[in-house]
Amino acid sequence: MPTRIQLHSLRLPALILLLSIAGASYSGDGEVTIKKTDRCPVCGMFVYKYPKWVARIVFQSGEAFFYDGAKDMFKHIFDTAKYTPGQSADKIQSIYVTDYYEVELIDAKTAFYVIGSDVLGPMGHELLPFKDQEAAQEFLEDHKGKTILRFQDVTPAVIESLDRRS
Amino acid sequence: MILHPTVIANLLASYVSSFMVVYAAYFGAQIIRHWDIQSGDELQLTLERKTYLISTLLGFVFALQLLSLFLFVFTADTLCPLFVGAMCAAGTLNVNAFGYPTLVLKIVNFILAGLWLVFNHADNQGYDYPLIKKKYLLLAVIAPIIVVEMLIESAYFLDMKADVITSCCGSLFSSEKEGGLGSEIASLPAKPMMWVFYGTMLCALIGGLFFYRKGKGGYLYAGLSLAAFVIALVSIVSFISLYIYELPTHHCPFCIIMEDYHYIGYLLYMLLFGAVVSGIGAGVLMAFIEVESLKRVLGAYISRLTLASVLLYAAFTALVTYQILVSNLVM
Image (cartoon, rainbow over all chains, first blue to last red; front, side):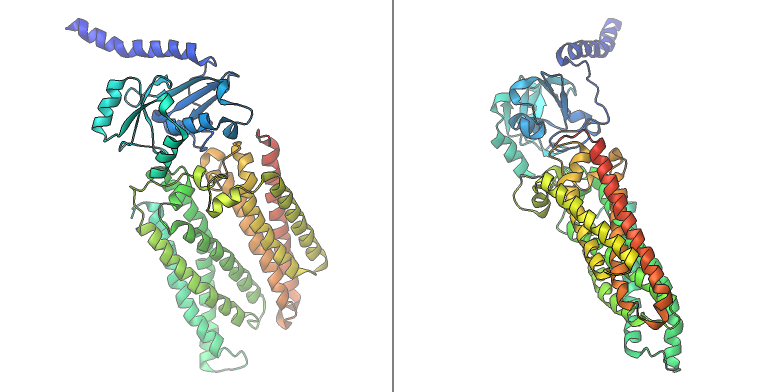
């Protein structure tokens, strides 16, 4: 029993350590903390106000952008030059979203996105990211979600339909 | 309705203003009908005594009306975290159909109330109540608009529901979205708008200085003031906001009042509203420059107003230019 407690109490620090190592290795820019001045390039919102919804894109140039939800992140991917003149989608180095249950940054390309649920983000109807299918399925059942999408299934039409529901 | 201190403050201010203005307008109607300075009639004496009280009270009421525009915008900004999708006052004003009409009426009433205060001050300079009938005629015009504003503002606050998903200013003032005045202004090309802005400001400043120095062209300056005011508001949406936010697509005229932007919006709007009221006031007062009892004093008052207006427009232009110069946005 004491061993179990010890193990359990070690889990969080270990996770943080792992995350920080992962963070340092994937970001390339070494900067994971959100500054008070970081704004979503799509809607202009200050991202620090919504830490649970943060998404992040880092370009090859090292330039990093934060978003207040996966929806705006996708908008940026679909129309990169409009929001950040001089950048294009093929210059993106990494894309991260925040797992809704774990509240940690996960790779956007392998994430599972639930749409149509009764959970709203700062920008209204959202794509809720999960790192594995089971979590996504559980959330879908608990929160009246409609579909689980993969990264490549998200199209401008999907984003538009989310905006139209608002 | 959302029971928030700012909402209660807004509604109270609105009800106090409306009640006082309606009462004063009723009194004003008596003045318009029965005022005769030559008469020693009992009614005339009562009116003369009462007008002191009424104009003093109205001075406070209209000062409250001026403040209420900023209080309203501040409230909308404060309440935005309560509504999904709202990131600033723009989203809060959009939660129902009465938000933006209230704002427009508040802007109109700000200018009218400001003009009434200018008139009142001029009237108090003469010993024989030279502008009294005009002052109360203007009040008769303002009173119904203030009552309509009170009704629409009440509908706005009472109809506020927290479960509404509203639009973010990013989409309300987007240059791509079809329809909507905000989007149409946002889609005006920034570079030409900049030329129009600086051109209009230059004309207004030259017109104002000419009027100040020569005492001629008062009506022209009143017109230029109004034009500069409208162009400046359009410019805030079209390009000034872009430089303040340093984002090429964010045109919102409300985010600039947030703490994150050091409340610079309040300063910009105060300069602008102060400039337009004093500018139009100075021009319109030229109509009464020949009034016997005002001849000696009105000229100086008009000059002061004109100078204030020119300085406020100059400060606004300087502040905008400074923001553009220090901005990291390159267009």
